[in-house]
Structure formats: structure tokens, C-alpha cells
Image (tube, rainbow over all chains, first blue to last red; front, side, top):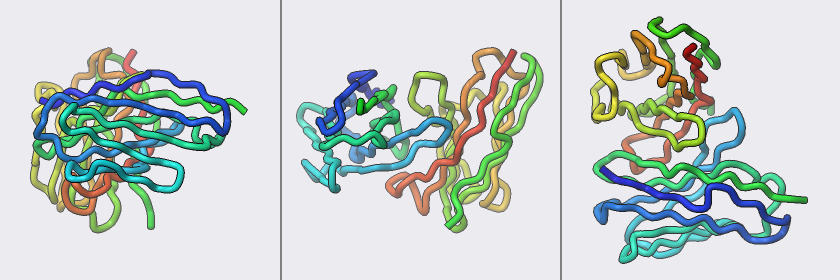
Length: 110
Length: 114
């Protein structure tokens, strides 16, 4: 099955700075890569996704890049705000099944 | 639009007892998922339904876990008997049609097995 590794496990940034989270996947057949944000006591919520035929996608302060050759993808958050503090999960879809990374706890310092 | 509903929100049981969780997906969503999220880890898929048929249950410990989705709407997940290692948050999610559509998650049920 698919194995998704996510780094770092924790990330502390100053408000206004950028945050970058990186993930690698093992199966080259994976073709859909969503990112989820999970706040305390809530279920994960989709924030952005990318398909394997696209190299980069941006939505306001959030962007995702995909390198199929290296089998890694990254989440970039610019101009971080306190409400960006949460746990972020990357995931990869393979054989109709979504496999998640272990998560990154992002803390934005005021 | 109402979100995915789950109940109960919290449950504490002794090992070897049984427990059941309930999920009501977003209206019209054909695909329903149950995930197990152990503290400090990402969600792990237990079972996926398309309408009321099982698409994938390869990671469901079938000796103790069972799930059903009657009439292609609500779903229940049961654990019998529970073990200490079953302590986790059980998340239900639904999507309009298949895994390429956005999955909407419920708030989860936090299970503690003592």
C-alpha cells in the first residue's frame, strides 16, 4: 500500500512569515494529493488539493507544488495569521484509497 | 448545508465491552468512509461504502470491527470486544461520488478503552 511521510512534525512561525510542509509518497501510481487542516476537537477540512497532471496550484495565501519524478509534494502558507494555527495533514490517493501523513502541528506566534 | 453528524462525541468503556458509533452523512453523498485516528497520527481508512456496498475494508480488523450502511444513508461502526489499542477518534466522512471528490469529515467520536 501507499506510504506517506510528512515533515516537520511541528512548526512554529512568526505571524506574517511563511510556513512550508513537505510530504513524500511511495507509489508512483498515486494521482491525487489533498491537504487537510484539523483544528482541536474537529474533523479535518480540505484546504487545497492537486492532481498528478498539475505541477502547482494556488489559492490566496496557500499553494501546493507536486514533483512526480521525486514523488514529493509541499504546502506553502504565506503571510501566516493566528488562525492558521492547526494540525495539517497531507494525503495521497492510490487505488481509490486515501493514505494520510502523520501531521504537522503549526503554531503561529503573534 | 448540514455537515456530517456523528454520535456520541465521547465514549469510555472497559476492555472487552462492545461499543457502537453512528454517522449521518451529508444528504446526497453516495460515498461514506470510517477512519480511525490514533493520537498523534493521521486518519487511517477502516472501511469505505459506495451507496450501501463495501468498496474497501482491507484495513478493518474484521474479527472485532463491523460496519453497515443501511439504505445507503446512515452508517454504524461497531467494536466487539474492545481492546486497549482501540482507543482513538473515529471519524466519519462522506463525499458526493467517490474518492476524487472532496471528503467532508464529521467531528468524530473519541473512544477511550480502560
